[in-house]
Length: 226
Image (tube, rainbow, N blue to C red; front, side):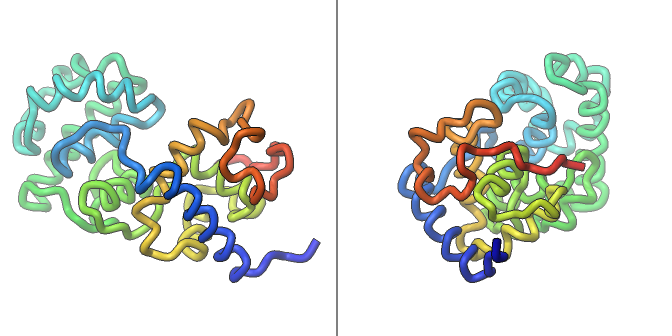
C-alpha cells in the first residue's frame, strides 16, 4: 500500500476538524478552574484519574489555597488529606507544593505563559503544559496528546505505527493540523473519544467520522505507549 502523502493527510485532517467543529464546536475543558494557576493544578491532579474526580476535590483545595503563595507554604500532609481520594495523592501533593514554590521563586508568583517554562514546574509535562497554554492562555504552542488523542490519531491514520510515544504523535499532528486548529483539537478529540471512538467497543456504526475513517472496524493496531 502506497504511503499517504503529507498533503493528503492535511486534507483529511481539515475534513475531520470540520466535522468535529460542527458537532462539538471549539470544545471546552472538563476541569473546573478560574485562573491559569488553578488549571495547572487541576491538570496535574488529573493524571491517572478522571476529571470528574478532580472536580470533586479542587473546590476544597482552592478554597484553602487560592493562590500560589498560599499553596507554597502549605503542609504537604494537609494537601494529601484534601486530595486523598485521587490516585497517587501523595506524590501529587508533594508536586503541587513544590510547583507553587517554584512559581513563587522563579516566576514572580504567576504561572508562566510559555510551553517550555511550564515544564520546569514539578509535576508538569508536555501534555499539561499544552493544556494550560491552549485553555488558560488561549495561545496554543502544541497539541496535548492524552490517551484519547493518542488512540484516535492512530485509528484515523494521522499517526503511523512508528509514532509510538505521545511526543511523536504530537509532532505528526502539528504537521497535519494548522496552528489555527491547535487550540481545539485536544478538546474535540477527547469528547469524540468518550462518545464514539472508545478504547473498547467503539461506536463505529454511529460515528460522525465513520465514512472517512481508514481503520475498518477500528482494528486494534495502536502501538504500545512508552
